[in-house]
Image (cartoon, rainbow, N blue to C red; front, side, top):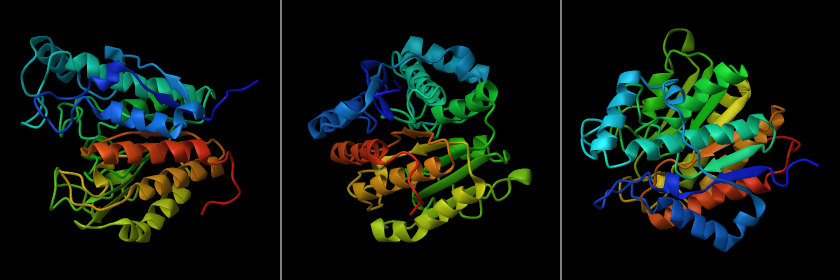
Length: 325
């Protein structure tokens, strides 16, 4: 009989708890504002809802070093300490919350690979600054990195695409796979000379055998939908040339106008455009596999509207359409 919907969404308190206390910009309210808006729009009636699950230590260590995983666990138990140089403080239960982010990404990936859905969205995920050996930029464990390794080790996929439209460069993913020629990386972000983490120049195209498999597009502060639309075809052509077997989207909404930490001026319409085009590309490649991760975003209204536009694109884009615009 097949599945009722093409798209799954993961919702639950376990991932909502991934948020820092005491007025930190990455607070625990982010999932709730998205899901309230999704329900108001009726999107919840067109998706399969999954409950979060935790990653095992073995799964976390597919990307992260054992010493770093142990550090997070000990700081989590203690309820204090820094997991990087200052941006990412530990809080009680941070290990469990971050493990549920990774486990939920893995669960969604498995649903896609098993054919129980074609597309999936996880609002609290896309923690793209976490390095193999340390946290960074509010990101404790790199769920995308774990998913990429798992797709290879468990499912035999080789060529995976990672597309990132968060205002901040996805440095944890980029440098984690900088010399990997089969990780197809495309990142559109605010110019690193003006924002954390200061990386992602267009000259960074991969190392060694991976040269040319990485695409970094820097956007000037103040860039909006028109500028984005001018450079976005580079990403489409890049993906068409490489034909990945699985596409991961990091859909951070801090690139939308009005975010308190960034200076880009996109609208939620760009998030709909990007998600739609990536689904169309995945369908044109014959597999339809798209895993969308919420990423950053610190304006509650932007989070709600931007992520709902991503889900709307996942839900509404036809299976195997003719042509890719």
